[in-house]
Image 1 (tube, rainbow, N blue to C red):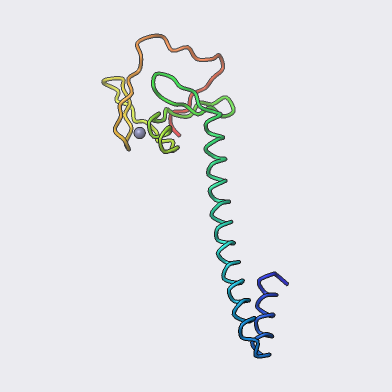
Image 2 (image 1 turned 90 degrees about the vertical axis):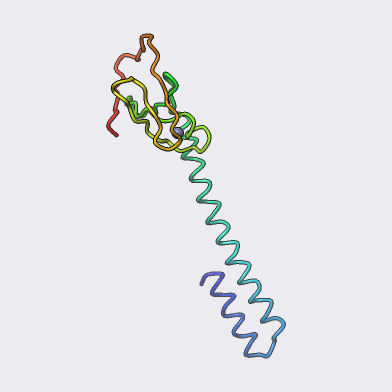
Length: 130
Ligand SMILES: [Zn+2]
């Protein structure tokens, strides 16, 4: 029997016994328990989201004003630095072949690739299609 069911049974017994004040207290306790359950659920969801964000931060690489997320030797991206820093959302940049720049479809920031040589660690693969 769950705590909630136990309170429900106790409330029924108190109501049948005419113990209205005690019955009311049990109903209040049930209500508070439901509020707390909802709060715990919300906090668990927040915690999950924060863990996910923390995990992403540990995998970030910055190159030419763009973020890449490296997992298992594969670099995904590039992502917008502004959106990821401010809203923790990895928004994929769109490349413009003619200018060599990339822009964010959300905040419209444009990142320009540097003219210098980009040095990639040996064996690193890029996955621009994801
Ligand atoms: Zn952006």
